[in-house]
Image 1 (cartoon, one colour):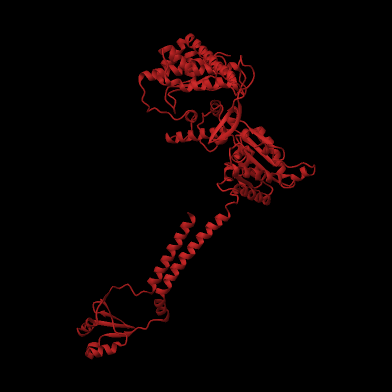
Image 2 (cartoon, rainbow, N blue to C red):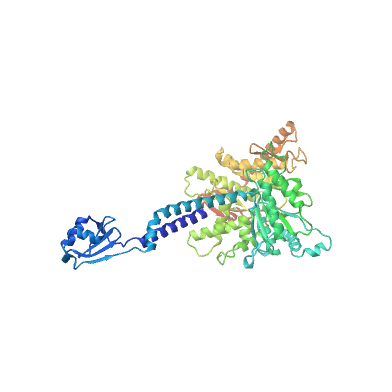
Length: 608
């Protein structure tokens, strides 16, 4: 597009140059009437002519009224012989100024050669234009196998450092050694220590893997080559391997430096997992990466940092010592880290004086750094759309719910009966969650539709937990089934509103038995080997390592857990019927209830 615009400008410039030349060497712009010689003679005889200019075969007659006439004589006759032939009286010529204009050599030759030169110039221009296009295509074809890695070295105030990465303390401590390797390699070489070849950053999407890699380059003050795993692979065989060679050649010349390969699972998947030759190009690319990482000399300060959220699919050869020596795990941030991340992302956003980011951190359990940045951005958009000058807590709360569930759909038309069912459904979730031991506290209940949900109950854990007990899972199943049980208890039949809850409860019950070994009858073991195999675009995640008889028992256990959770929910609904009615009536009146209002209706949550 850039070349096309440049060629268009050149063509336009050439057009204006040619037009200017024509204008410069053309005759003046006075309008001229072409007449015959008889008219010229008659005008002279009638004494209407003031001046006559003769230039070659052209005769220009200027009349007394400034009108200009143009005529042409025969090539062999002069103007004097013309006057003589028409017997014009001498006295008619006394007041006429007659001049003979000789063309200059340049004008004469320019006018003579322009019709020949101009087509040649135009044809030559188009030939050059086409040749340049072909050369560009040829250069692209020649550079097809070259690495397209983005290389940069950020300096000054914009240089990223570990101070710009909130949380991830252990990951930063692990990467500090890499920075030290890059800055002071000699002290390690003196002790015979080898610099790590590769560092693998593992973590969920949005946890800051790319930002950490950039921060390592910023701390070490070295060049940073950034390339995505998908950029290596093309439809042509051998291109990926060629690009790998090109990338590592560039890095070795720029050493000390960092090569960062984002989403390495795009090329680093386990070899032989596909059927047929559909993955030959990807496997060749992976082979070349393995060879290049083996080819590093001990004194070359080039470190490969790769990031992925799918370490389970990577080829074992990538993970062996000598390739990716270090594996750095980046967890989802805890409450303190979430608060720190929110402070980092809120630096350029005007927060109101009463804004408490600690409360936002409490409500955003399980959010990644990218999610938290998105919350602040959504809050800023919401505040701007309401013509506010500052971001307040309400904007942040609304942003959390928008990110978690979706935007409000107040325009959705529902009947009074559907509204009542929804109110009882959400009140059931809230009451059971409030009174069941170990369940998360309720922070908000709403019957306003959001996303695909007709209503929602927002539960937030009181503290970050990394381990869960069987009773906690059973309590969660009971909370999920509470809406279904309320509908059955109050209205005598159930609706489709509990479909999502039933699906989640079934999935959680299956995990308890097949993944966590929490089945009382089947014992502490897992069921189903989780292996990846791609066939016809589908991923088959589970390979059965148990018999049909055991599969039947698993189904029975799932049904038993769901039944038990439903009975737990029903007991609380029956025993807390008064609290259920209070919450339902409040929802029908206000549509939304916050934590404080909810606790005024049902009391403070009992301690487990």
